[in-house]
Length: 359
Ligand SMILES: NC(=O)c1ccc[n+]([C@@H]2O[C@H](COP(=O)([O-])OP(=O)(O)OC[C@H]3O[C@@H](n4cnc5c(N)ncnc54)[C@H](OP(=O)(O)O)[C@@H]3O)[C@@H](O)[C@H]2O)c1
Image 1 (tube, protein in one colour):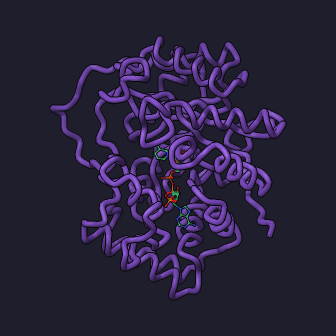
Image 2 (tube, helix red, strand yellow):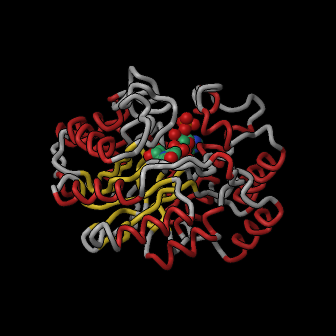
Protein backbone atom coordinates (compact mmCIF):
# COMPACT_ATOMS: atom_id res chain seq x y z
CA UNK A 1 0.00 0.00 0.00
CA UNK A 2 1.39 3.44 -0.90
CA UNK A 3 1.38 6.34 1.58
CA UNK A 4 2.23 9.91 0.72
CA UNK A 5 5.00 11.11 3.00
CA UNK A 6 4.73 14.91 3.21
CA UNK A 7 7.73 17.12 2.47
CA UNK A 8 9.26 20.09 4.28
CA UNK A 9 11.59 22.80 2.99
CA UNK A 10 14.35 22.83 5.57
CA UNK A 11 16.37 25.36 3.56
CA UNK A 12 15.99 26.98 0.13
CA UNK A 13 17.39 23.95 -1.69
CA UNK A 14 16.96 21.28 0.95
CA UNK A 15 13.61 19.50 0.85
CA UNK A 16 13.22 16.65 3.29
CA UNK A 17 10.50 14.11 3.89
CA UNK A 18 8.68 14.69 7.17
CA UNK A 19 9.71 11.19 8.17
CA UNK A 20 13.45 10.64 8.50
CA UNK A 21 14.81 7.12 8.90
CA UNK A 22 17.35 6.97 11.72
CA UNK A 23 20.14 4.47 11.07
CA UNK A 24 21.54 4.02 14.56
CA UNK A 25 20.62 0.33 14.68
CA UNK A 26 22.46 -0.44 11.42
CA UNK A 27 25.52 -2.54 12.08
CA UNK A 28 24.57 -3.72 15.57
CA UNK A 29 20.89 -4.61 16.02
CA UNK A 30 20.44 -4.78 12.22
CA UNK A 31 22.62 -6.67 9.75
CA UNK A 32 23.69 -5.22 6.41
CA UNK A 33 20.93 -7.15 4.61
CA UNK A 34 18.27 -5.93 7.06
CA UNK A 35 19.54 -2.37 6.80
CA UNK A 36 19.24 -2.55 3.00
CA UNK A 37 15.64 -3.85 3.30
CA UNK A 38 14.73 -0.96 5.59
CA UNK A 39 16.42 1.60 3.35
CA UNK A 40 14.74 0.15 0.25
CA UNK A 41 11.32 0.20 1.86
CA UNK A 42 11.77 3.73 3.23
CA UNK A 43 13.07 5.17 -0.04
CA UNK A 44 10.44 3.46 -2.17
CA UNK A 45 7.77 4.83 0.16
CA UNK A 46 8.83 8.46 -0.29
CA UNK A 47 11.35 8.92 2.54
CA UNK A 48 14.38 10.82 1.24
CA UNK A 49 15.90 11.81 4.59
CA UNK A 50 18.35 9.56 6.50
CA UNK A 51 20.09 10.33 9.77
CA UNK A 52 23.35 8.85 10.99
CA UNK A 53 26.30 9.77 13.24
CA UNK A 54 30.00 9.01 13.28
CA UNK A 55 29.53 7.08 16.57
CA UNK A 56 26.69 4.81 15.33
CA UNK A 57 25.63 2.05 15.66
CA UNK A 58 24.46 1.92 19.26
CA UNK A 59 25.12 0.47 21.75
CA UNK A 60 28.49 1.75 20.63
CA UNK A 61 31.66 -0.34 20.62
CA UNK A 62 35.01 -0.20 18.86
CA UNK A 63 34.31 -3.28 16.70
CA UNK A 64 31.19 -1.85 15.04
CA UNK A 65 32.05 1.85 15.02
CA UNK A 66 31.16 3.59 11.75
CA UNK A 67 29.05 0.78 10.32
CA UNK A 68 25.84 2.84 10.11
CA UNK A 69 27.45 5.42 7.84
CA UNK A 70 29.25 2.72 5.90
CA UNK A 71 26.04 0.70 5.31
CA UNK A 72 24.22 3.81 4.10
CA UNK A 73 27.01 4.56 1.62
CA UNK A 74 27.03 0.97 0.39
CA UNK A 75 23.28 1.09 -0.10
CA UNK A 76 23.51 4.22 -2.28
CA UNK A 77 26.20 2.66 -4.44
CA UNK A 78 24.84 -0.88 -4.70
CA UNK A 79 21.29 0.30 -5.43
CA UNK A 80 22.49 3.08 -7.77
CA UNK A 81 20.52 5.65 -5.80
CA UNK A 82 21.17 9.09 -7.33
CA UNK A 83 23.08 11.00 -4.66
CA UNK A 84 20.92 14.10 -5.06
CA UNK A 85 17.74 12.13 -4.48
CA UNK A 86 18.59 11.56 -0.81
CA UNK A 87 19.35 13.92 2.04
CA UNK A 88 22.10 12.47 4.19
CA UNK A 89 22.55 13.81 7.71
CA UNK A 90 25.30 12.79 10.10
CA UNK A 91 26.94 14.09 13.26
CA UNK A 92 30.23 14.75 14.98
CA UNK A 93 30.57 13.34 18.49
CA UNK A 94 31.21 15.76 21.33
CA UNK A 95 33.41 15.01 24.34
CA UNK A 96 32.07 12.06 26.31
CA UNK A 97 34.83 10.51 28.35
CA UNK A 98 33.96 7.27 26.51
CA UNK A 99 34.42 5.91 22.99
CA UNK A 100 38.21 6.04 23.08
CA UNK A 101 38.16 4.61 19.54
CA UNK A 102 36.85 7.94 18.18
CA UNK A 103 39.77 10.38 18.24
CA UNK A 104 40.63 9.39 21.86
CA UNK A 105 37.31 10.22 23.32
CA UNK A 106 37.09 12.79 21.64
CA UNK A 107 38.42 15.21 24.20
CA UNK A 108 36.91 18.33 22.67
CA UNK A 109 35.01 19.67 19.69
CA UNK A 110 37.83 21.86 18.47
CA UNK A 111 38.46 22.67 14.82
CA UNK A 112 40.79 19.72 14.33
CA UNK A 113 38.28 17.21 15.71
CA UNK A 114 35.45 18.62 13.61
CA UNK A 115 37.51 18.61 10.43
CA UNK A 116 38.78 15.07 11.01
CA UNK A 117 35.28 13.83 11.81
CA UNK A 118 33.88 15.27 8.56
CA UNK A 119 36.68 13.78 6.48
CA UNK A 120 36.25 10.35 8.11
CA UNK A 121 32.47 10.37 7.59
CA UNK A 122 32.97 11.23 3.91
CA UNK A 123 35.43 8.34 3.60
CA UNK A 124 33.10 5.86 5.32
CA UNK A 125 30.08 6.84 3.22
CA UNK A 126 32.28 7.24 0.12
CA UNK A 127 30.43 10.37 -0.89
CA UNK A 128 31.58 13.87 -1.82
CA UNK A 129 29.34 15.78 0.55
CA UNK A 130 27.10 15.58 3.60
CA UNK A 131 23.78 17.39 3.26
CA UNK A 132 23.27 18.19 6.93
CA UNK A 133 26.13 18.10 9.41
CA UNK A 134 25.16 18.20 13.06
CA UNK A 135 27.00 18.69 16.33
CA UNK A 136 25.72 15.59 18.16
CA UNK A 137 25.89 17.16 21.62
CA UNK A 138 27.49 20.36 22.82
CA UNK A 139 31.09 20.76 23.93
CA UNK A 140 30.03 22.34 27.20
CA UNK A 141 28.26 21.09 30.26
CA UNK A 142 24.48 20.93 29.70
CA UNK A 143 21.86 18.75 31.36
CA UNK A 144 21.17 15.98 28.82
CA UNK A 145 19.57 12.56 28.31
CA UNK A 146 17.14 12.69 31.19
CA UNK A 147 18.82 15.36 33.32
CA UNK A 148 16.85 18.57 33.79
CA UNK A 149 18.46 20.84 36.36
CA UNK A 150 21.50 22.89 35.43
CA UNK A 151 24.35 22.49 37.94
CA UNK A 152 26.72 25.49 37.75
CA UNK A 153 29.43 23.48 39.51
CA UNK A 154 29.74 21.19 36.48
CA UNK A 155 30.57 24.05 34.13
CA UNK A 156 33.95 23.82 32.36
CA UNK A 157 35.59 26.08 29.82
CA UNK A 158 34.56 24.68 26.44
CA UNK A 159 35.91 25.24 22.94
CA UNK A 160 34.44 28.53 21.72
CA UNK A 161 31.38 28.73 19.48
CA UNK A 162 33.54 30.76 17.07
CA UNK A 163 36.12 27.98 16.61
CA UNK A 164 33.46 25.32 16.02
CA UNK A 165 31.55 27.46 13.52
CA UNK A 166 34.72 28.51 11.78
CA UNK A 167 35.62 24.84 11.19
CA UNK A 168 32.12 24.17 9.90
CA UNK A 169 32.26 27.23 7.64
CA UNK A 170 35.49 25.99 6.12
CA UNK A 171 33.84 22.64 5.41
CA UNK A 172 30.88 24.41 3.78
CA UNK A 173 33.25 26.51 1.66
CA UNK A 174 35.13 23.35 0.63
CA UNK A 175 31.85 21.76 -0.48
CA UNK A 176 32.12 18.96 2.11
CA UNK A 177 28.92 19.85 3.95
CA UNK A 178 25.87 21.77 2.78
CA UNK A 179 24.01 22.76 5.93
CA UNK A 180 24.63 22.87 9.65
CA UNK A 181 22.47 21.52 12.44
CA UNK A 182 22.73 21.22 16.21
CA UNK A 183 21.56 18.41 18.47
CA UNK A 184 20.74 17.94 22.16
CA UNK A 185 20.92 21.71 22.44
CA UNK A 186 19.47 24.20 24.90
CA UNK A 187 17.95 27.66 24.32
CA UNK A 188 21.25 29.23 25.38
CA UNK A 189 23.20 27.12 22.87
CA UNK A 190 20.76 27.82 20.05
CA UNK A 191 20.97 31.56 20.57
CA UNK A 192 24.76 31.67 20.98
CA UNK A 193 25.42 29.49 17.94
CA UNK A 194 22.99 31.50 15.86
CA UNK A 195 24.42 34.83 16.98
CA UNK A 196 27.99 33.80 16.13
CA UNK A 197 26.92 32.08 12.90
CA UNK A 198 25.27 35.27 11.69
CA UNK A 199 28.09 37.59 12.72
CA UNK A 200 31.66 36.44 13.03
CA UNK A 201 31.29 33.14 11.19
CA UNK A 202 30.35 34.87 7.93
CA UNK A 203 26.59 34.56 7.77
CA UNK A 204 26.23 30.83 8.21
CA UNK A 205 22.70 29.49 8.57
CA UNK A 206 21.91 26.88 11.19
CA UNK A 207 18.84 25.12 9.86
CA UNK A 208 17.90 22.52 12.45
CA UNK A 209 18.18 21.19 15.95
CA UNK A 210 17.79 17.47 16.59
CA UNK A 211 16.39 16.97 20.07
CA UNK A 212 14.28 14.25 21.67
CA UNK A 213 10.59 14.96 21.25
CA UNK A 214 7.74 12.56 21.88
CA UNK A 215 4.61 12.21 23.99
CA UNK A 216 6.77 11.49 27.05
CA UNK A 217 9.27 14.27 26.33
CA UNK A 218 7.83 17.63 25.35
CA UNK A 219 10.42 19.93 26.92
CA UNK A 220 11.08 21.47 23.50
CA UNK A 221 7.70 23.19 23.70
CA UNK A 222 8.84 25.89 26.14
CA UNK A 223 11.93 28.04 25.66
CA UNK A 224 13.36 25.94 22.81
CA UNK A 225 10.23 26.45 20.73
CA UNK A 226 10.43 30.21 21.16
CA UNK A 227 14.11 30.30 20.14
CA UNK A 228 13.58 28.02 17.14
CA UNK A 229 10.55 29.93 15.93
CA UNK A 230 12.28 33.29 16.09
CA UNK A 231 15.55 32.04 14.66
CA UNK A 232 13.91 29.96 11.90
CA UNK A 233 15.48 26.75 13.11
CA UNK A 234 13.41 23.59 12.65
CA UNK A 235 13.15 20.68 15.04
CA UNK A 236 14.21 17.23 13.93
CA UNK A 237 12.33 15.24 16.55
CA UNK A 238 14.24 12.13 17.55
CA UNK A 239 12.93 9.04 19.39
CA UNK A 240 9.28 9.75 18.52
CA UNK A 241 8.25 6.34 19.88
CA UNK A 242 10.27 6.80 23.07
CA UNK A 243 12.49 4.00 21.77
CA UNK A 244 9.49 1.73 21.17
CA UNK A 245 7.71 2.23 24.52
CA UNK A 246 4.84 4.17 22.91
CA UNK A 247 4.01 1.15 20.74
CA UNK A 248 2.76 -0.44 23.97
CA UNK A 249 4.78 -3.63 23.51
CA UNK A 250 6.67 -3.38 26.79
CA UNK A 251 3.36 -3.56 28.71
CA UNK A 252 2.77 -7.19 27.76
CA UNK A 253 2.80 -9.56 30.75
CA UNK A 254 6.16 -10.97 29.71
CA UNK A 255 7.69 -7.47 29.40
CA UNK A 256 7.64 -7.48 25.59
CA UNK A 257 9.74 -9.21 22.91
CA UNK A 258 13.19 -10.31 24.01
CA UNK A 259 14.67 -8.82 20.81
CA UNK A 260 13.25 -5.33 21.50
CA UNK A 261 15.94 -2.75 22.25
CA UNK A 262 15.27 -2.13 25.93
CA UNK A 263 15.18 -5.89 26.64
CA UNK A 264 17.93 -6.95 24.24
CA UNK A 265 20.48 -4.42 25.49
CA UNK A 266 19.46 -4.27 29.16
CA UNK A 267 22.27 -2.59 31.07
CA UNK A 268 24.05 -1.50 27.87
CA UNK A 269 21.78 1.31 26.67
CA UNK A 270 22.69 4.12 29.00
CA UNK A 271 20.77 6.93 27.30
CA UNK A 272 17.61 4.89 26.76
CA UNK A 273 17.54 3.28 30.15
CA UNK A 274 18.11 6.46 32.12
CA UNK A 275 15.60 8.48 30.14
CA UNK A 276 12.86 5.90 29.47
CA UNK A 277 12.77 4.22 32.85
CA UNK A 278 9.54 2.25 33.15
CA UNK A 279 10.25 1.51 36.80
CA UNK A 280 9.28 5.15 37.47
CA UNK A 281 5.55 5.27 38.11
CA UNK A 282 4.97 8.56 36.24
CA UNK A 283 6.70 7.20 33.10
CA UNK A 284 4.72 3.99 33.25
CA UNK A 285 1.40 5.68 33.93
CA UNK A 286 1.83 8.32 31.20
CA UNK A 287 3.00 5.80 28.59
CA UNK A 288 0.14 3.41 29.33
CA UNK A 289 -2.33 6.30 29.22
CA UNK A 290 -1.26 7.30 25.69
CA UNK A 291 -1.52 3.70 24.48
CA UNK A 292 -4.95 3.52 26.08
CA UNK A 293 -6.11 6.74 24.35
CA UNK A 294 -5.08 5.22 21.01
CA UNK A 295 -7.03 2.08 21.73
CA UNK A 296 -10.13 4.01 22.82
CA UNK A 297 -10.15 5.96 19.54
CA UNK A 298 -9.34 2.94 17.38
CA UNK A 299 -5.93 4.31 16.32
CA UNK A 300 -2.69 2.35 16.33
CA UNK A 301 -0.51 3.60 19.23
CA UNK A 302 2.41 4.07 16.81
CA UNK A 303 0.19 6.27 14.62
CA UNK A 304 -0.91 8.31 17.63
CA UNK A 305 2.70 8.90 18.70
CA UNK A 306 4.00 9.79 15.23
CA UNK A 307 0.98 11.81 14.08
CA UNK A 308 1.14 13.89 17.27
CA UNK A 309 4.65 15.04 16.34
CA UNK A 310 4.00 15.52 12.64
CA UNK A 311 1.26 18.06 13.38
CA UNK A 312 3.77 20.30 15.19
CA UNK A 313 4.49 23.37 13.07
CA UNK A 314 8.15 23.62 14.19
CA UNK A 315 8.93 19.98 13.40
CA UNK A 316 10.55 19.57 10.00
CA UNK A 317 10.92 15.82 10.27
CA UNK A 318 10.31 12.96 12.67
CA UNK A 319 13.55 11.02 13.11
CA UNK A 320 12.30 7.52 13.85
CA UNK A 321 13.85 4.09 14.03
CA UNK A 322 12.69 0.69 12.83
CA UNK A 323 14.41 -2.67 13.11
CA UNK A 324 11.83 -4.55 11.00
CA UNK A 325 10.06 -3.67 7.77
CA UNK A 326 6.63 -4.19 9.38
CA UNK A 327 7.56 -1.55 11.99
CA UNK A 328 8.48 0.87 9.24
CA UNK A 329 5.11 0.21 7.61
CA UNK A 330 3.34 1.05 10.86
CA UNK A 331 5.24 4.32 11.10
CA UNK A 332 4.42 5.17 7.47
CA UNK A 333 0.75 4.54 8.21
CA UNK A 334 0.79 7.50 10.60
CA UNK A 335 1.00 9.82 7.58
CA UNK A 336 -2.65 9.24 6.87
CA UNK A 337 -3.83 9.78 10.44
CA UNK A 338 -5.27 13.12 11.54
CA UNK A 339 -5.71 13.53 15.26
CA UNK A 340 -9.04 15.13 16.13
CA UNK A 341 -9.24 18.06 18.58
CA UNK A 342 -10.90 15.63 21.00
CA UNK A 343 -7.91 13.27 20.96
CA UNK A 344 -5.49 16.18 21.39
CA UNK A 345 -7.48 17.29 24.44
CA UNK A 346 -7.18 13.77 25.88
CA UNK A 347 -3.43 13.75 25.21
CA UNK A 348 -2.99 17.13 26.83
CA UNK A 349 -4.90 16.02 29.91
CA UNK A 350 -2.38 13.23 30.45
CA UNK A 351 0.45 15.64 29.71
CA UNK A 352 -0.73 18.17 32.28
CA UNK A 353 -0.93 15.43 34.90
CA UNK A 354 2.45 13.92 33.95
CA UNK A 355 4.37 16.61 32.06
CA UNK A 356 7.34 15.21 30.13
CA UNK A 357 8.26 12.34 32.44
CA UNK A 358 11.23 11.45 30.19
CA UNK A 359 12.97 14.82 29.72
N1 LIG B 1 20.75 13.19 18.37
C1 LIG B 1 20.72 12.25 19.28
O1 LIG B 1 21.34 12.32 20.35
C2 LIG B 1 19.87 11.04 19.01
C3 LIG B 1 19.53 10.16 20.05
C4 LIG B 1 18.72 9.07 19.73
C5 LIG B 1 18.30 8.86 18.42
N2 LIG B 1 18.68 9.72 17.44
C6 LIG B 1 18.28 9.51 16.03
O2 LIG B 1 16.92 9.19 15.99
C7 LIG B 1 16.74 7.93 15.35
C8 LIG B 1 15.55 7.25 15.95
O3 LIG B 1 15.74 7.07 17.34
P1 LIG B 1 15.01 5.90 18.07
O4 LIG B 1 15.40 4.62 17.39
O5 LIG B 1 15.24 6.03 19.52
O6 LIG B 1 13.49 6.25 17.68
P2 LIG B 1 12.08 5.63 18.04
O7 LIG B 1 11.31 5.74 16.78
O8 LIG B 1 11.54 6.26 19.26
O9 LIG B 1 12.36 4.10 18.40
C9 LIG B 1 12.62 3.19 17.38
C10 LIG B 1 12.55 1.78 17.89
O10 LIG B 1 11.24 1.45 18.33
C11 LIG B 1 10.89 0.13 17.92
N3 LIG B 1 9.78 0.25 16.97
C12 LIG B 1 9.71 1.02 15.85
N4 LIG B 1 8.52 0.88 15.23
C13 LIG B 1 7.82 0.01 15.98
C14 LIG B 1 6.53 -0.54 15.83
N5 LIG B 1 5.76 -0.24 14.80
N6 LIG B 1 6.10 -1.42 16.78
C15 LIG B 1 6.89 -1.76 17.81
N7 LIG B 1 8.14 -1.27 18.00
C16 LIG B 1 8.61 -0.39 17.09
C17 LIG B 1 12.15 -0.44 17.25
O11 LIG B 1 13.00 -1.02 18.22
P3 LIG B 1 12.97 -2.57 18.65
O12 LIG B 1 12.67 -3.38 17.44
O13 LIG B 1 14.31 -2.82 19.22
O14 LIG B 1 11.90 -2.65 19.69
C18 LIG B 1 12.84 0.81 16.77
O15 LIG B 1 14.21 0.66 16.56
C19 LIG B 1 18.09 7.22 15.52
O16 LIG B 1 18.32 6.21 14.58
C20 LIG B 1 19.03 8.37 15.36
O17 LIG B 1 19.19 8.64 13.97
C21 LIG B 1 19.44 10.80 17.71
